[in-house]
Length: 76
Image (cartoon, rainbow, N blue to C red):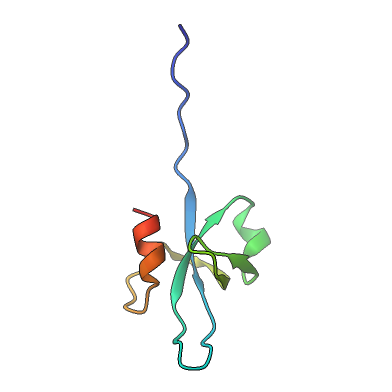
């Protein structure tokens, strides 16, 4: 019998969405599959499915108040 494989926890960083009409800009979670330097400042698909600009200096979960509720639930 083989030993169970260890699954690495996903690397999550915060990304800021743009405000659209009456919708406020929110912080979202992005799961990194590439080196952080490659995605810093780029728009990426977030955990909840929207597009947001990655800020690798901002850890997830972010202490900000304006955070996407869907991303919070999906990253627990």
